[in-house]
Image 1 (cartoon, rainbow, N blue to C red):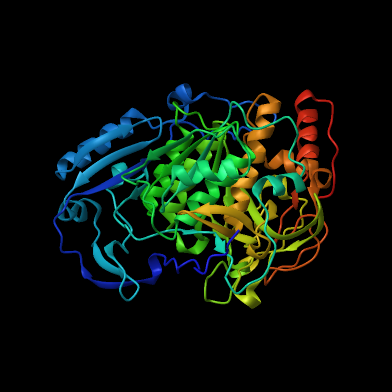
Image 2: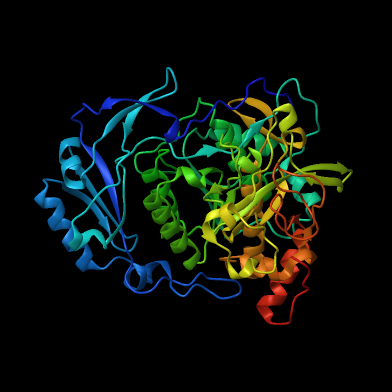
Length: 521
């Protein structure tokens, strides 16, 4: 495999944009109103329980109240806004209006922002949208007024000057003892992308090169105007995701949801994948994210509500924990975690450096190559989400200002580009690492477990933390900056990397009620 000389370009977030002045355009803008749900919050479908509601029944129990929608329609009409769609089961109402109409309706001032010195200009909004008191409680968030990017892809290409060893995804699956006799048949794995493009010819050739004759169907889904656009740097992310899942779960179907890199696009991608009654994904893999503190409170709440829908429907969500160590790329010198990996509804995936001898793991340590500018695994303590019950015995350290927060990550896998994955991108063979490889790795493993178990794993946290050491390679050496690896759970690699067959055996035992081996977490 050849090495790429290219490095991932800098991926600026909203805070890094330069304000140019008030927005001057008159082109209509589409916004998404995320509505509150009726009733109490749905309970995550934690293994081995089946989802409390099917997709077709979810709206009647947990969707938006029609009365709330009617109030919002009246509000929209009073401001000259056009309703372009409403899906009560997903709790969304889509409105369109001129910038002037939207500014008046939501009490904001839209601005023009430039990303970087010579980057594109886009609409931004620093103000928090305001709604009349009689409807404000009905709306979680107004998304789409700010079109600046909210997330980065968490992949790292191996530099041409770097030396290392690389593996195919099936080799990594072998190191981690992915269960024999499984290939994900009957499952659909959703992949969310906020940029880049998918090239079918590359995927087919890649699978043929690996000797895999059963090539999965890849369905490209457009979300909120997002499309597959090959030819950019983010193609490395897209093809890494598809090729890891395709080669490790060749019996599964794959659906790639392309959305704009905005709070609106990200929310819509999660929500549409979770509620997709055509493709029925059982796993969602996310390799994009941004520092927790870079999200507005309303955007964070909207995303959380979409993730809550997913796990309530029995969908497992995996997400990369970031590639910039314990700071997550922030420059204030303080520890930060990446969202959506930090959500308690998400299986957060950290990174290791894996060296093998034959078909076995020789050593596995925390991925930290920051000294050579090759990145490090994200991990730490959430400042937004409290410590979940299933992490209570994991000795998660105190977070910022002593906040007792959710620990990140939950699990890990090979991510160091120095021990990276052999993939094919835009007609070239490359070696790519990053926690972006670990989210699809775990998504493929879960799809294979789902196949054998005969039902979706759903929210995996309670089960995985109960099983503990029996199903994981405990990573005890290395650090990601502020945090060190140690026995049991740690804020670098979580519970560790998977022992696939042992994990499946333990999950099967929990399903039948025959008990399960447990270990320290």
